Image (cartoon, rainbow, N blue to C red; front, side):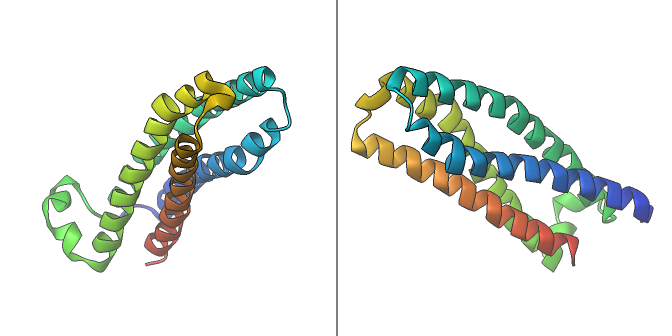
Length: 161
């Protein structure tokens, strides 16, 4: 088993990176986008473009740290690469981890599609985004936030079991 202090350090860095990712998603959805609606269209588009670009650098950096520390957390629990081939998944802890990993994958894919395709297309169109496309954007963004919060809850379960 890994030294308790190293385990705490890995988990703490993981939680910090998760806070940056989830906090950033919530900040963009709850503050940046609503405040942008007060601006004239040209200023709003630039404001959202700059805010999204700044969050993308920080947010994707946090995702990289999450992957690294996530692997570190598995290792710190005493599992090696061989355990990933079977034994890990037959435990209750491994089952929760599997659900978390599926949700993380969905969240990251949704965030990537939103950042690379949906968001830039909406910014190009400005106010001309149809209500249907705006609804798709909002659903994708909200689903990403809901998945992020659910992943954090599963992380707490994993850390406490």
